Image (tube, rainbow, N blue to C red; front, side, top):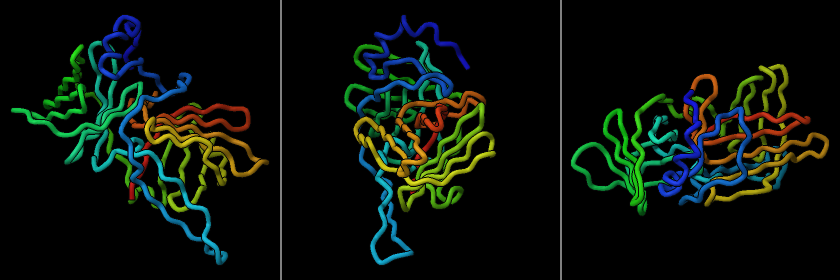
Length: 258
């Protein structure tokens, strides 16, 4: 992974691009705020109580910036000045994640390659290279690691998947009810617990969940920000922070659309 010692120098330029902040890898403290972005929840889920006559609680609608949209791949980019970005290119839009948050850009006319724009922010993809610019600066980027997006076929019944390292853990949110499955300590502990939503901010792409059982407290924070696995370097569109039993686990994740 590249070192980011030059972040203090380039911060004014990155702020002008709407991509302020230096990348935070999964073992470092998670920041509190996310950048605003156009977000419309696009992961509708339904649930029914099979054991009774009344409908059971439904899983929440998650912000769309936690999802790759129609894109089949997530691409990590290493940029100069020092900044790491992630893109997901669909037929009708480009989703872009930085250390500050997420943006969705519409196609724009260009002679070669693919260009996308949202206000003063534009991204021009040209093979292994990308140019990210605004009226006050630019980032010259090169394609790095590519990751196939998670699908419902590979994760049936799952609306969101998160994972982390040292010790290995993962979390999955069910798509039909406010319920999650936790696997901790390299699979030594497994829990299935209900949850309740304490924060749901579509614009910022941020969700905070808490336990639905007082006897088993936990918190789960999900943010639409560029996240790179600290072992493989794989790019993910969300940062995940899990607090349980006095321990804090940090990792990356992705929303999985139907």
